[in-house]
Image 1 (cartoon, helix red, strand yellow):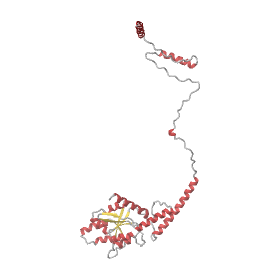
Image 2 (cartoon, rainbow, N blue to C red):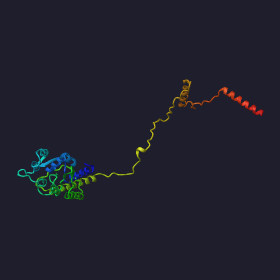
Image 3 (tube, rainbow, N blue to C red):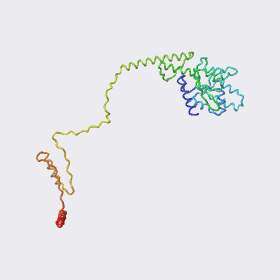
Image 4 (cartoon, rainbow, N blue to C red):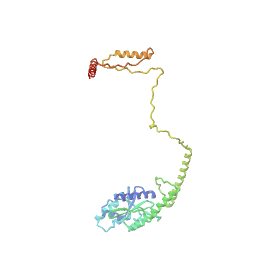
Length: 319
């Protein structure tokens, strides 16, 4: 199946689920002609139906359709696989087994899909039929998905006009009343009540729940206080953190590091300097700091410099 068509089928089944309450596993009514064509095209009927409907299915067949397979004018070797496939499906009782001759597919399926002639698909059947008359009848019933096979391709028909009208009417009703229907478990519908009456009761119940919910929300809003919104401060992550200073007692001298020893210097000199620093801290002697060493030139270099200067003076006098 192509991706575009598969996407359309998925959206179509979602619309059936939201509007008419279809859910998995889908109940699929299969007729005798559909079984024959699937066998002729060598198709996996159940697997193809699950791929087209995008969900698990429960294949069902009526008693009249099984009797049609028994009366096929084909050899027994071709008939047995069809009957075996039909028996693997769930049998839907149509209460026509007492008749001498089975009813036609149209009469049988019309009694199963719409037994009360109310033009509603109360049991939410998906009809898989190859007969055009059956599909024409099902288009007049609201909410009936139709599946058929054409040239070994299984096709899901788009919604009929009557079904589309019901869908648009429900959407307009929801838009007008402001309802937001929440999906939940579907209750079993008592027999003998019409679908329109049940829909009307369900709509009134949802309106009452909506009014109660709005009153409750209004009460909660009045109890809550409004938050005061003032000027916002700077971003704390963009502020430079202040440096923490160590606490220091008044009058305490600053700690001084020990002077490093030079090459070849003994510890006596450093000890003498430390005594001077300690005496300065006690206030006995002012601390002048470490004396700067003067650079001394070597004696040989000074003599050579004097000789060069003397020669320069003699040359200047001679000239």
